[in-house]
Image (cartoon, rainbow, N blue to C red; front, side, top):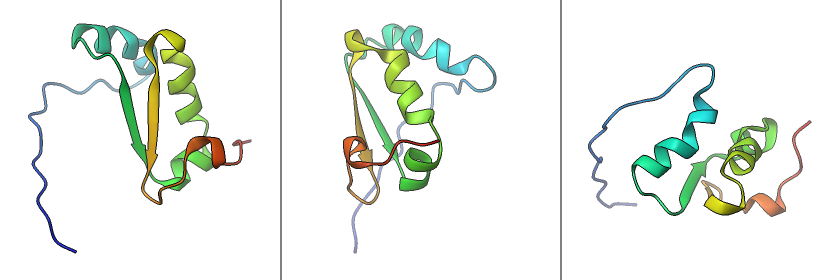
Length: 80
């Protein structure tokens, strides 16, 4: 495999308690209409964070999920 990857400039990082609740405001600030979540299968299947992001963004700000192994979120088991 070969290819190129260009890192985008990192403006700032939001982390810690309450970060997820800040996501809709950050997307609004950046004028983002749709978010893309890229994750590996463990994060999507063994935690509930991906679903929490989807719920936080809601119907008004739809998001798509791409996993490293190519499966879609609708094909995954629900985390406990």
